[in-house]
Image 1 (cartoon, one colour):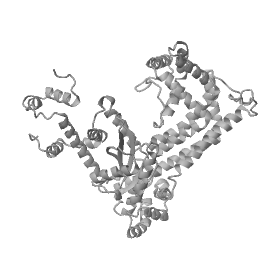
Image 2: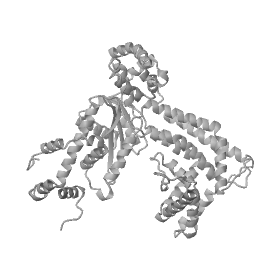
Image 3: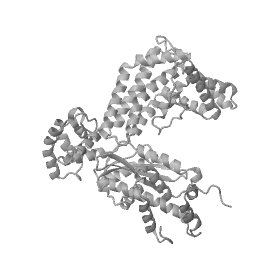
Length: 572
């Protein structure tokens, strides 16, 4: 008896045969039973042909030019360490691209074995370590030490493969991890985690939140307070914050503020009617904490800080982001944090008081003496204003600003200072011929002594030429400059400058593309498909992730590759 679910491939063949008489005759009726070309091995060969052609397109895009290596690792559902490899490069149209090359199962995670895997991958695709001009890892995985060793091994072989720590991971470490070093902020995030576990772990409680939210929306619409329209008033749910999901903490706190009155009702229900005594006690503790001034103060403070950094987090995850613009965004964010520290206290306190009044939570008089909850009977000799402004507000922001300086100074090097001299902002205000010449010295493989002499002669003509051209007047990034250089064909008269632009744009910003590959891996290889082989998994992922290139692959090409793989009983 045949199964009613034989897998996507066979079911698709069956469906196609039902719609197409020719397919039905050739595949299902007239094909020999031992040569229907639908067995698992045939399926894998076909997918491999598609993946191989996609990789060929990527190598053609690189075009024997320089590129950057982005690497990260994660365990799949079978507890195999999978290393994802992504290339960042600038194509012939001066467009920055990040392409997924593949997953490699690494049995040994030492730096030497990782280097061997990279070497094998390069050799397989006809690439050389000498083409490498950058390397990026997130620096936060359990293989951090091994990746640091890999970085050193690559730099020993190619000194121009500059390492840039993933900006997005650094930002996450700055904003959340550092904030948690402050005891009260750490307690706040601990309670948020408990809250998500208590309210978000039950389908019934989630349904209660959805139902109460629906009622609130309907009441608002009936009173004319809420507008209706396509995409408005969508169903909301709580998001569990995670250290590797950069905006999750911000989203969780936003939902908490928006649904606060509803959440209080749900917690009160759990406290009275919960079947689990542990959950009832946790709900009681959360209700007490949510009614405190401390909770409201740190909720509003962290919303401000996370709100300021969220735009930076989103911008850093763009594939076409360049390092100069990323550093500029980091600088602007730090300036906003400094401005918040200097001028933001009054507005923060206004928001805190407004929230307390709206939700009837504890409200303190700022001029009263502060009572330390750890030592309530001992006089603190300070006012509430001093405690919350100096020991909380100023301290948390000072920690954030200091950590911004410490974590991002790794890229505040001479290299970045020289890159800034190419910036097109304000009619190339930062242009400095000496720094441009110094930048060329960072890439001895790309600029010989003769090339540097030629570059020096080009610079005067280059800057005068583009400043006079209105098409270069309002450019905002190095990527924009590179595009316009191609469109105006000025790359022909200033080839050395264009070469520098390509090298700078190749420098990595973040490993978010690699992270997205792991998300796809978890969709492809699940607990129900946990026996999928490494080669087949890699071929499926390459075809799925690089859809743009996959669509360019023709059936004729795949059929020829499939036929040439080995001797077949019939010719397609």
